Image 1: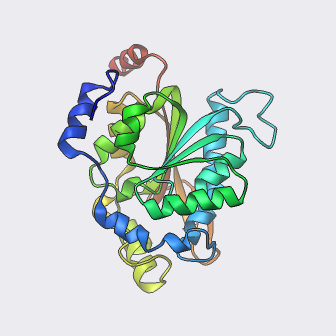
Image 2: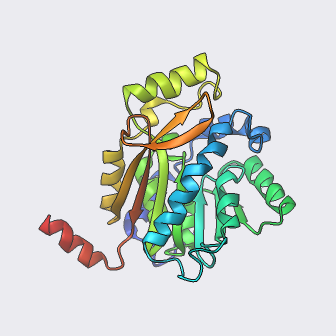
Image 3: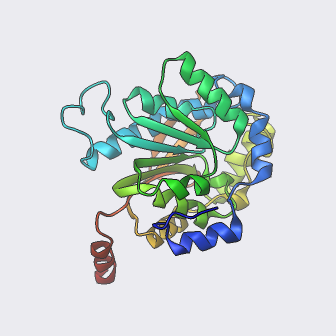
Length: 277
């Protein structure tokens, strides 16, 4: 495999040492769910409902960063002309929603069945989305600083080696680009309510979908991103009401949360700010 000459040595070393951050057990789990991706009342209905929060998170975050054209802000396609990489896109629930807002979306996933389904569903709905069966590490090799934004929604809690995964995501991001993530916090509340109760008592999601050991605290996630010079703009708590299948924003980050971070235009200025702090 020939490496791009611009690819940072730090990430080259991690690529050769770990090859990929994909967990075969996680892929096997989601392989079983492929047929249910577009069933809005099936086992993935919380993901469908989450679009009410995560789509505005991306749209408003990019507007606030000033990368959305003024003439597009109040249009039905505010993200027109912006390139977005949806990492761990699955069957395309978030990818399609962002494409409908005008974004040029690339969705990647390590589950070939999910990618095939996503391609079929997008074609059926006349949406132009570039779906690829690949890992973020492989994709980063040929796509340095290509995207205006990257989404990794409900993905990092399924990744064992989080640092190389995030390193690769950041490498794909343009200077001034935004990283949007949603995930589960590593707390007793998550373990009891979002994992044990959801999987074993209420049967909201299939058993074994989440492991508390793989969850990550917002502070730790922020620290990893800061190592890659990303500045955190916002961390917000998220709450899921399983009785109504609705998500809402909340102050505590005890169970779920979102994070928006931005890659600085000039790395030197960011380092200077960090030294002053």
